[in-house]
Picture (cartoon, rainbow over the protein chains, first blue to last red):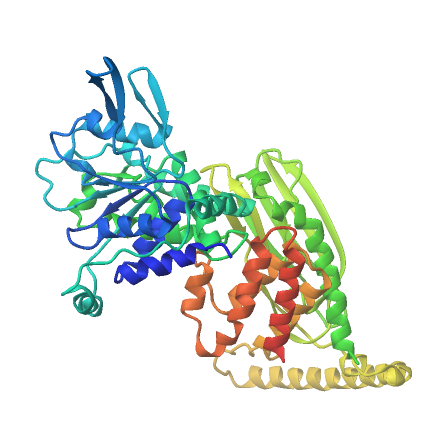
Length: 307
Length: 301
């Protein structure tokens, strides 16, 4: 019997304590064939979650630590002269993997970020005159630390838009923190065993694409996105049409995750904060008035009539 | 065996379901919503307090800006306690406005207050470009008992007595009227002799408001869905059951389920089943409706 996404979820939960929403977000991004941005303070298992996802799917995994001196060639690869054969050989960079962890993506300069984001969009890299397709599936999971922003390069909105989801991770609660101590105080954090294959992931993607979305729900998606664009003193730019597509894609993935062949309004409402939060440019007035962007988004979503 | 009231309800259900079927294409396709600038949307009854057994008019009036040739996605409220006798629609154009008028000829089968939910219209607001659901006012009709009301509800065996009883009632009514008139004249004369404080108008005694119980509303909804198992009817029934548990327009199913009261907790499977029927694929629709019917049966058992 082939594996289900819930098998992967269970495997991740054996390794990661709490962070249920983040685990679901990683699965949704993988099933919806998108990339995810993870933001949270240090030490809350962002990197571990990505490693665990790769291990459970038996996917090739590469981690790139973004630093200010990183170059595009360090990511996509370069051509090196081989003295023995007297010719240039192509050496592919760490981006050629099924799951790529771009750790602290905002620490690298814009040129490097652009190289990564271009590869994310095109699903191929060009080195010299040669174009190399990236493996399928190809999922980039980028992390950002909201603290220590000195010396970082904020991602422009247009580049943030390329990420299907932005997953916010918070600190675990008391009980979860105690469980972390009991599990890992004296032991290395084990990665999960393989519970599914890349073929399974491809099949899940096909299944999710076949999930039915009613016309009324398309209208609901548009209403949600339009609500972010309606006049507000707190918003400079609302969500893009890519956000509408992302909402439908993620809602399909969530319906598939829940063994349904059709999308319900709940699916859309549930994924909307993660899909919209990094696609809206807020004005300074929002922070001046002490309003959290997540609160504004939650309020806006709650104001849209459910079909 | 089904009683006369049940039969009336079943007939109503069929009629309503047929109406819903007519409206189905418009409800089913959000992409084809008309762009309208709605100015007025009202529902009224004429007369406001009809008599039991007599037909009266229920008028839905929708005024929109511009010259609109066709409006066909006005959703009527569930008229489970009224017998539908006719439905006429027209659009008139005047002063740059289009006035849509739908007149339903209905008849009440019982006395007391009958509450009608608002009629609704799904359209794109031409001013903002956003999809809106417009609602008319809701309406409470107080149905008064007629002179023959006690006899009209008796079985056919008593039907032969009706003309005789009619005359007796007529004579008795005339006598009561004469007595009341005499009392009024006497009272007026007395008032002329001794001035009294200003008269307080006598309170109009309305028939008692008979609220439909939760079970009755569920039973009506179940009947309507069983009579016409279509997507449009499933959606109407979903809205009716959601309103029964106090769901607001911006709440999703999980919001509603999360705050269900102890009393309504038994409706969870029904709410889930209706959600499925509202949004599932066409292939799965009949299965989903069968699940709804089973959930209704479970709740009503």
